[in-house]
Amino acid sequence: MIEAASVYSHYESLIENSVKDPETDPYRSKYKAICCLNGFLDVMTTFGTIKQGFESSPNELHILCLRAAVLFLVGKLKCETNEAGIAETLLLESLSKASATLDVQKTLQLKLSILNQLGLIYCDLSKHEQAEGVLLEAISLYEETKNMSDKLWCVKDIFYGKIVDQNVSDDNLESENTLTLYYIAQVYQHLGKSSESAKYCSLTLRKQLERGVTDTIYWALNCATLSQYFASRNFFEEARHHLAAASWMMEKISLEVQENNEGLERYHYRLADIQRCWAKYDLLLIDHSWELVQETPVEKHELHFNCPRFPEAEIARFEDVPFQTARTFEEARVIFLHGQKMLNAAKSYYSLEDRATDYFEIVQEHSHLYRSLAKFEVDNGRESKMHRRRIDMLEDILKVMNKTLYLNVAQQIYFELGETYSDLFALKLEKVEALKKLHDHATLPAVVKANQVAEKAIKVFTEFLDLYRDKNGKIPESLGEDNIRPVLLARFYIGRFTSKFYSTDTKKIIQSFRSAIEHFEYVIQYCANSKLAKDLLSEELPVCTEMVQLLSLKIQRIVNP
Image 1: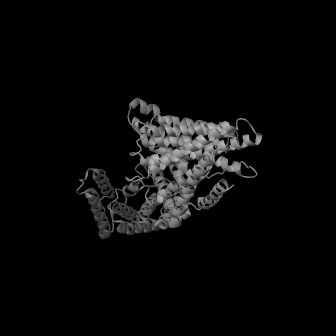
Image 2: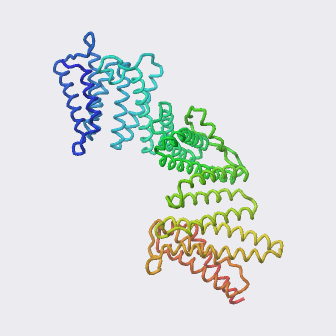
Image 3: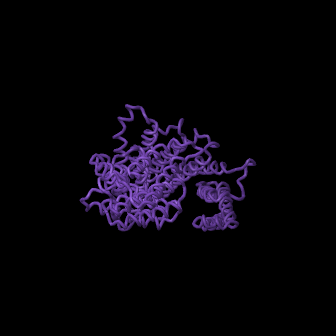
């Protein structure tokens, strides 16, 4: 006669020792555990009765519970040893037997475990609809426990015939529910149901917080990462709440990390990541605010996502950042300053010497904050200063960057720098036209400044194109898909700047027009030979065609007045 309790004890011992299995035989202990459990099943089948360690013999319903528990453990092990097909069959049989007992107190936790394991298997097999079904059933089962007064048994209790440790049983229940929430979040991501995935990710984080977070830094990073989904969908209140929770957690553990000096590097690394997530939140909020300002009439409306809140009151201290959209420059500036503060803090970790790529990205993010804030500025001079600030920071990193080593980053920064000059040039032209209307004596100096900006823009876009030249100094006739639009846009921009030079010298004007035509025709010709290029420049191509005709006509009028 075999005691069920001793079988479970032996099973536990084998699983604990499985971490010591050699790499050449990684499943040795798990295979032994499977043999042990299967042997126990055979004994139960052969003799029909089993000693449980009870004072009296167990009834048939409990024997059925025990069979279901054994089948579950074997199925779980089969899953862990990469035998998903067999595991699924065993788990479905286990679920059937557990359901047949009608003993909710003894089998509810077991059924949760079975459903979670099935969900995991279906996920691995890319059967996401089936995974969704069993996991939703698990969630429904867990909800039933809230209305139950009886103490629930865990799998171990079934083997021992009694609740061994109520705290352990309760913890197992919550642990299974946490896994359910985590699994279904992944399932919804695969099914393309991003909002459902985000909701269950948030529920998982909250559950982990309630139960005690084991890896606090990882938890904080997951909160910050999830915030980016909410911010990208304009759910800014929810995004802020998750970022606040991340910052709260990092502050909570900072003293311990500093005192123990354990994991200090990882702490500062992830803290900088969270600070960058804050800055991204600020940027998205400013951009969305501008989109709403452009609407007619202007309406201030916020989107809300039905998302649970973290219960800790301390989190509120980190929610002093606005989540409402800005309507004025002053309101947008408050958001901007917070984003700037976060990026400056992140720079203290992502230094140019140690983490150059990340440092370059932070500078670009800082530039983007200025670009977004500048849209709210109504004063030409102050807006120009913001773009000047962007130019300074982008040019500074180009001076120290190894452009061969960081070629892709250099291409991005050169292009953004050129676009920044384009924004500044538009402001200079606006000022020139305003002064012309007033017949102001300051028109000439303004024209000179506009020409200088155009010359610098052309220089930047030319250097950008140089990054694509081969050893012979030529840009390949066939560009990669990712390079077509930026390269052709650079030629488009150069043509546009060249065509807008102010001059009283007709020879220079004609020369500028002919140079501009050359750049526009390059774009036209490339698009004529490439359908992809034509699609990618669907807006710019008609402008090129129009500019070639217009500039050619202007040249004729100058030559033949």
